[in-house]
Length: 300
Image (cartoon, rainbow, N blue to C red; front, side, top):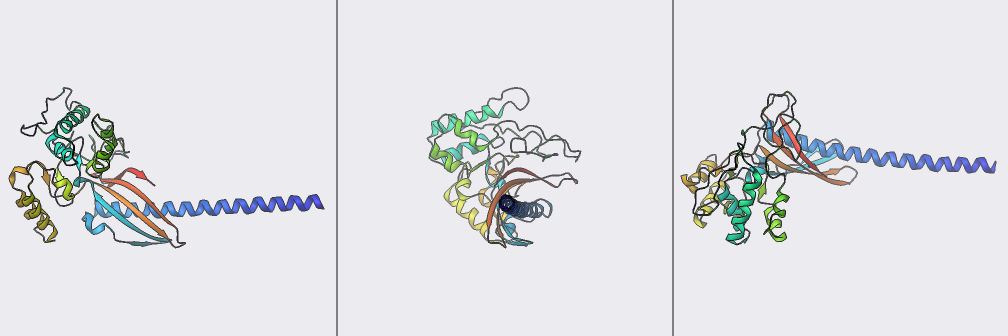
């Protein structure tokens, strides 16, 4: 009887332990579901409904089991390492107090890492007084298959046939810049907020870029920046036109007034149980009717 009682007690402990583990796993599944739902809703609003990112940003959504709040960053408001004009990259680097000679050497290395667009290495000058040619994106089209962070935002096929996009040419991450000689750790702290690999046409969205990034535009002056910020903060329907007019036609090749196609979305989830979790994803719009958007990267 004593032995039987001991066995029953041990079995009871094992059962309670298993039930506790199951409850923890169920809670984790619920949290993951809440986070994924938040990402999917934000992606649908941005990529399908074409809602402006500032209208999606910070708007709490109630769901079963809790609520989610998306925080949206337009990747077009950053300077793309693989597609931006070298002069724009040079402006970003000197904008973080990197000296001119070092910044020029770093931009030269970035252009080298992009690789030849058509099988030959282009001669690109990054001197501030020169006129370097723009290295265009491969085809300017969004992906056609499930993409990861190491794959391109562009693809040769967006017909929805399930083919994976081609490998991104050039730098695979903003962190790659930190491996270039002359780039300091303190430089990277600032550059992470200003650079991207998810703005494939290389032009800067003047309606969503931070003032620090806008200052990187070649020929930008304090007066032009003040006029630009005043125009976009007006909230009028003509804000984009007024912002572009404030800069003048000489900057037309560097700028645009449209968000996307890629966004970084951070979801803050608060469960009814009181537990809070967050996740961050990079999503991009697609032209495929079968796959309106893709999740390029996911971090919890």
